[in-house]
Image 1: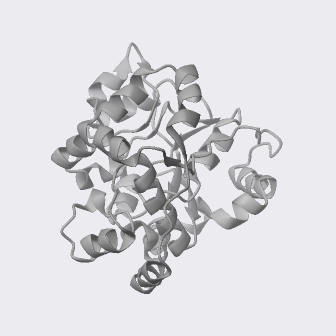
Image 2: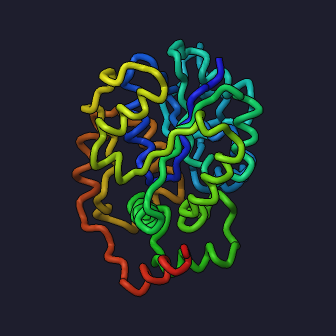
Length: 287
C-alpha cells in the first residue's frame, strides 16, 4: 500500500498539528512514523544522521510483526521498508507528512514517479517567523547553544550538510512550491498558510475536506500536538545529553506518563532573547 496524500511543509510550519487533525478523520490514515523522509533520503548523510541522533534505530527494525514503532522522524532509504510502513493503513487516504520534502529539489519528481495519483497539501509559513521558531527549537532541544548570528553564518558559508541547514533553506518556500506546481497538476495541490490555519482551523479543514471529497465534519479539533515553547532549565546539560544521544534514548524508552511529569521539571526557563540586529540579518538573508 502506497501513500496517496502528502503534507508538504517546512519544519515549524504547523505540519505536526495539521497531521494530527487530518489523522483524526476516519478517511485519513497516518503511519506511526509521521516523517519517513523516503523521497529525500539522499539528502541525509548517514554519518550526519548518526551524529545528530535523528534516526538512532535502523528503519528495518521499525517494522516488527507488521506494527511500526511510533516515532516522529526516521530516514526510510529502502522502498520495501517504506511500503511496509504504510501496509497496515486501510483508509482511503494514507498520509506522508515528511517536512524535508519541501526543500528537496528532487522530491517532487520522485513522489510523482512513485505515487502518480497522490494529492498534496502544501503548508507554508512566514519565512522569518518559521526560521526564528526553528532556531528556538534548536536551542530548546540542545541541538545548538550558539547565537543566531553564528548559526546563520555557518549556513551562508555552506559548510553544513544539507540536512543541517535549518534556517535559510527550509524558509525559501516560494521556489519550493513552484517546483511542485511545475510537477503536479493544479487540481492535485491544495495550498494552505500556517497563519490562516491557526486563525481559523475549522475553515482550513473544511477547505481540505471539500478538496479531498470527504466529510468536513469528521475532524476532531481537540487533537492537539503543540511543541513546547519553553527552554530547558539546564541548557548545558540538555545540550550534552543531546550530543551523546542519551536524550534521544531516554525519550524513546520512557513511558509517556513519565515524560509528561518530567517536562515541567526539565523545561520552564524563558526562551533566549535574540538581538534585534541578528533578526534583521536573518531577514536580509531571506530576501
